[in-house]
Image (cartoon, each protein chain N blue to C red):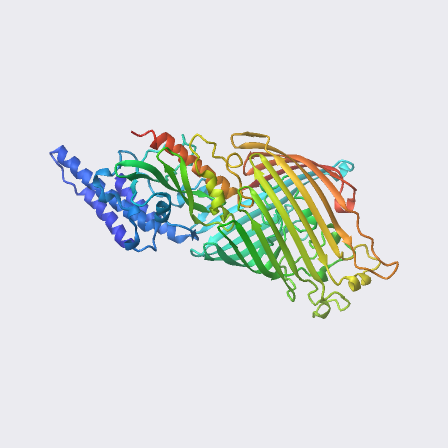
Length: 173
Length: 459
């Protein structure tokens, strides 16, 4: 039953993604290739997510891949979306095997303003962050004037994924 | 292709149901395992299609090899499957109205109490705004803001009901596009980002009300874009203010020269057009440095209009407004500075016809401010941010020369200190208190030391 639900949700999402205004900067594949060396394998991971414990909105379900080379886990890759001002920002986060951020990419942006979150200088602030860091806007992440809401919500999204990593993925045997 | 996938999904579902009752548990387990593997492969395929709908299957690289090719490694555990995001996973899904349509809004309520004239204390619902976007397709949408000022708008009331922005936006590429319609002028720090949660103090700063009118918008066509190195640019060809609207008997021109003659696309005189341009650099996180201009003829050939003023003597008047700003936000600190200066040419003859009236057209006007804010306290989603702002501005810094004895002296430069606190209950709800100290009083322009209280929100 769960499996069937999963598949129909997947197909549904395909259709939804086609309907809205969106500027696509990168595909998931491009982000995966940019974040990890050639020859890495991306294995979809299912995880039980207690959204309330992670301070996430109910229904929050990011896509998670375990990244492997041979049998060794070399990192993690996430695709998730947050609201900017009123539209979704789709983004990808890559962690190394120790849970350190190696890259953050904005895949799709739909707002009229605030698209500056895709600037490399801003995204690079996350490099090296772990679940132990604050990862909070105006603390260890600086704002972009004029794109405050997009900056704040994307920062909150990365914070959530790092918590997901440390409490769920890293905790798994 | 999508239909094919849906078919696969359905087939997968039927396959699950058609498993006959097995006596042998081990056989059942292995079959389920095989199905799991197959399902994971299908899911990965769906994912790839979803993520790269335009990418041809042949171009998918080895880096994204579907897990089905390594059956032993599929790590689908006994847990709830992680499903793709759809539009329903938003933190505030209430904003979605229908497919492709979203709503948002902001509002502001202000209480002002002049310390020397408490009888003039006033509490006003300054503005309530409803905004919307509707996406027609992947690259085209409409963006609109509808505003009510001062609570009630009718023939007998002081309020206004207005369309603040209404434009079509079309993305030509990921990093640039065009807009057409009624748009806010991309100048200064406040005009584009005027929600009450975005600025310190109950009232918007004076410089960006008196010199750069707020909220200033014009109708036309504009291009926008940004680069990977952090440049953000805007250029527009739009309607001009209308100098024919200048009222030498009113104080409006002294409160805000451009605010008294901008047209807000209300049956706007469109003989003259203006050009706007802006360049911002955001390449270092936390930093915003930029400059903008607005330039064009504003006489609108008023004397030759069908219903125009045939005595009007500034058909060729030109406006040039320039502005430069810098803002630095780092940790709890937020510093901003802005300078702006405007000139209006060819006003000598027009002002001569205004002799004896209180408000001639200035030749130049200018203003600047510096502001510092410090997030002193922060708990949960709340924060307390004291700030200090110093402003200087002059809406009539110089007037065109006139015959001996008829000239207008420059206005005195106003100086305002504002000290206060923004208390953010959460990032989208703010309560404000401040005290403003003026260099000189002017009852007509509401200049005078005062206490202010404010409520603001944004969603």
